[in-house]
Image (cartoon, rainbow, N blue to C red; front, side, top):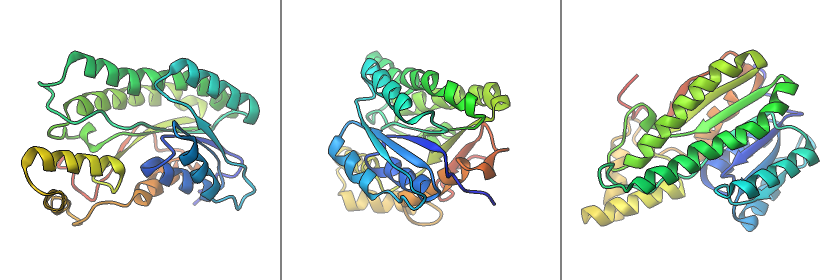
Length: 262
């Protein structure tokens, strides 16, 4: 099975921590040259300096606020000119604040759609010519199991994640003939700052302790525990590889069997 990504460049959004950092590490271990993108330069530099480089790669960072479309476009243009096209794009963005769908302000939906959907389309427009020219592209969206089964108290997130999933499915049909696949990985309960934030929010609203909330959440997972970020990164590494060339347009839960739908 060919998992080798030598000679490939990967852009990992949200690459300064959590799932993005784990995916950057996995892609680099498979031979890709990785550029990690997020706001914090210090965190990005720490990640970059810790990435495997056994294939002689020179990893890099892009410290930019992805919600500032003009700054993001300028930063990406400079990186494309400096290093050439990206063959792999991990589209990974922190989720909207928790809360009931009926309680959310209209602006919350508009802001989330801009952050997750409109910005993703802007990045796509910059990366697509290089992927097409190379005849190789792997677009991987880190979404949520809410794409298959909406989650309680994540009204805005459920809505926006589903929109991105349908965008990705549409792209998967349009781009396949160019050697570009588009897939979604759907993390379940994974040990990340995002999960810690959700646990803390639930504890506050329910009057339970953080430990009680975390134990109750883990008990709902068939394998009986939260995932490690590296376990999702393993799926990303496979889908980014030549071995996954005939897998296109799927939603892949990495959730320990928690999602109650096919």
